[in-house]
Length: 120
Image 1 (spheres, rainbow, N blue to C red):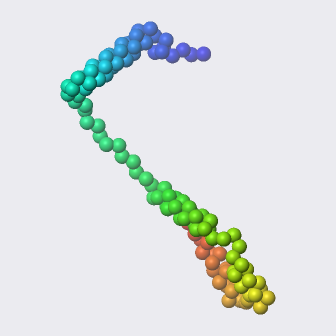
Image 2 (spheres, helix red, strand yellow):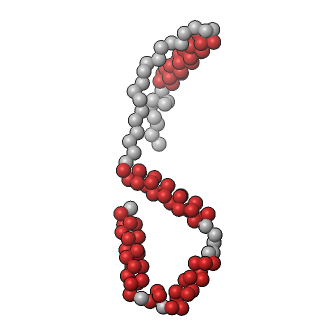
Image 3 (cartoon, rainbow, N blue to C red):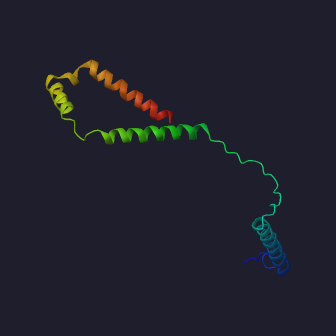
């Protein structure tokens, strides 16, 4: 097993401890100045952090929001709508769903759903 020469070097460890102690002393001194009403030492200004969100991430966030809204709307609806069940039963008895026009409309709707899924 190889040993890390830096971590096992007593001089390197001592210099790290010295640097830590100096940092602690500086922080304690700054704390005393602020508690005594003195001015805080000037801190160097840092460049602002910046994050960029991809178009895909935006689309996924919008999709998630739409999904959450849909789930909430579905939860607000009753589990069984008796009026719609009665209407569908009547249409089935009349053969409404076997017509070419209705089948074409259903196929078109399914095609739009599939295309929408493929765009994701």
